Length: 571
Image 1 (cartoon, rainbow, N blue to C red):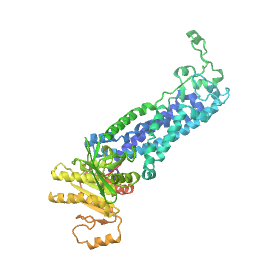
Image 2 (tube, rainbow, N blue to C red):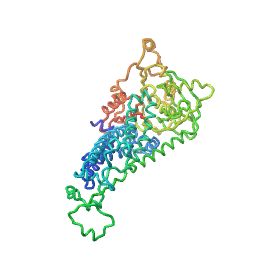
Image 3 (cartoon, rainbow, N blue to C red):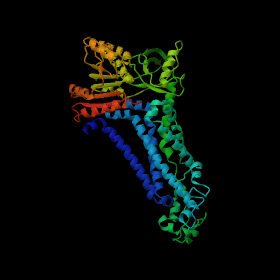
């Protein structure tokens, strides 16, 4: 438990604060509508379903206020730079933006279900009250015309009629359908296999928020007016409904004096002021500015200066753009109008901030990437036009803020670390003494030997630079090949005594199989007993769970001993 606290104590505080605010809002508004005197007559018709609908609506407003913020990438990049002087526990929260966005989405779905079910009960009870006779309190309340409490005015206004003709009903249906489509298309399977479906469907959020802004304009949920409560208190008047009198306009003070104190006037009601827009307008405006900024930057000219086709269907694209500034480990979004004018896909930058260009390595991993690689192959004479948005910050920006860093990449997941290693190479060349990091461990896990090709040159350059600068021990890298045939194994055995590796040509020999992470973390822990170790992963969730478990296992609560901090790329 103590080791878990080292990595997640601040996340737990944030989560409990969010959960506490949800519980408070739900309880506060639930009690207003369940116990409040102004809603006594409304509650008599609807029962507790009214309170359930309004309590869940308050939570919906709160979570809809938050859900756009984690996807405001420029805002997150700004905050990451602003918090650069803060403790790493605070900065790490920005790396959980997608997870928090998903949590908010699921919470909105849950509260929408509660809100919708409660209002379906309300519509049914409104209808039953409307067809009741005036000899019942429900029927008497439903007969009020001007300052009504029951939106159902006749038997012809059936439940379906209310749901599909009122502002609240129509927008509620639209909002719910949009939410269902967004949630279902966000599943892991859809996002990985049919990204375009996810991308297009997720933009239904525009319809969702538009419907949300006007959902409460109809003011269907109504409470008793303060003036009416003075002449008709529920506790003393609800059982005298057969003797209620209608208050005539223009009555004088003398007329009021003649009224019997025991007589009750017909109650009047007013709709609640719409509140949702007050919750969500500010984040909507912020998100609009975010998109405008991203649109402006995406329209700036991008010059493709070089493309290189690497083995394993990897395409390297080197580009230039006016005013482009980056940090290590950041990522950009790329759009190719020849393929689609609307689709934007994220790619980690593989260039270093010290270089006068920026680059990405794109592996064939789906329809869009396949077509992009093919477009560059076919366009020998004229380079295809690309649009670029970014760069945006990631967890890897903090790699130099730790005493020791462990970098773990799986397949093309090595790309953010290419930027880091290149930056280290430049720092060594100019003998930058401000580098806090004293040791870097790099693990690259691949299925095939061809994947090592494009990265081997960079590692070879680093080997030479560190040897010449007397820092041989700064970088410890290990390459793991998880899939091989008998010819590769035989070749490795034959060349076992050769100084360089048979697969990569590097001094470090390639390992066959997968790392035993407990052993790796134990060795690092023993070698750096009083250090803060940053563990950075760009790879699958299963690998992330293993690394995170090791971080918990080998971290100490004592700040004077080794502590492992887990960081994962999310975009």
